[in-house]
Length: 587
Image 1 (tube, rainbow, N blue to C red):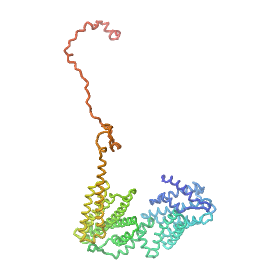
Image 2: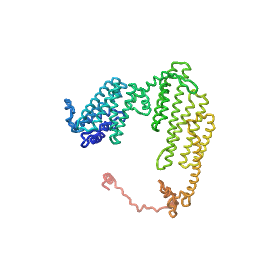
Image 3: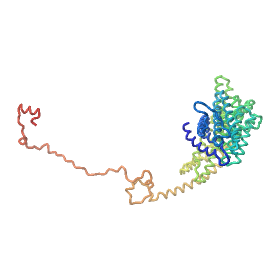
């Protein structure tokens, strides 16, 4: 919370500029203010409690600045903002913040109501409170002192909150009318103002559209279910609508799943008794059709991730059912059917994973070619593609070990054929990575390996022509490899010529330090590197003359003359001398 307060001051200063418009009356950029406040104070991460705290602090600052206090610390005195008080647009902002605080509290309670259903009553009360504040704001904006744009934004804001209340009460017709009114106003505003503001209004329209379609479906429009399913697949309907859309589509598929009892795969009928598996298999065709119709790669990636997540959940449900049946000690046929159903779902997951990675690899190949044409652009590298083909090969290895398919020789041949194709592509991009570092011989060997894999694919594909429909074209790869081989040989020859030029007499490299050939000019790149060879270090040892040592060997055989006559003899002092010696008198 403390970290938010410096940002709040900046937002307040920015909002002051949005709140006062020149000569056209009081103005308030309602949608822009609430969107910026929500993004900066918690709603980017769905933290409604943090945003509610921000609204409370903002209200306190506004009341203090305007001198509009509700009594004192001992007594509450309620006040209402009237039309006569509208001398400053911050009075409108005060009412807006009250509505936002009540709305954020309602959304916080909505999150908590998943585990505590009693909080739903409090949620409805706070939503009604927010709608009531928005009606007050709309009424104040009807004054002649407020400009036309603010009036329209206040009407749209009131319609939005009123629609939210009716939506929670499941009054679908009234909710749809309110949301349609809100949508109409924002569309008109988007067509009348700058592109920046128009983008903000269109974003709000996109947020409201799932609610309108959901209301239409509940009223009885059966065509709305298709729009809702498409919206869910493309990532629309986030926030409040996400759970409702999920529940609605699950409910629609559950009705269809009641009539589904089995599926046929690899020439065998598989009974489907798990409800979650039935619902997933019914929606599989719709998901694959949506992926095929995806407008761009980002949407396609999102659809693949959604499908894979659903598939993982379904496989987990089948495994739990299998464990339950094992505990019950059911018949062998029931267990085999569940095991084969699990294999079928795992097959769908692994095939989807292969298609997803192949789609990503195709996108990276296009980018790689564009980057090769324009060297100034930084793009993907061959190593990125190698990683994708590694994941594809790993998925194919798992496919060949699926339970119940060990004896299906046709299936095993199809998997081995696909493995050869993707090995060829992986080997091709490994060769490309070696070309970048000028390892010509390694790259040439790898290109030969690519051709070997491609010829194996062509020889085996005669009996399995149907398996090559969804695979990359091997003939194109062969043509590309042949072209790359010629380019590689030319580059290797040019590289040898450059190497010969570099090894000229003046460019011979040896380990002689610079101090030993100061009179000779040589080009040595090591001299400007991090460790230049300037002098030999540590220096070599050099011979030096030894210091002579003299040994006097005759000293022990020399007889010295006596010196007794020259040494002073001390006399005997007797007792007196002894006493003086003790007390130091004689010294």
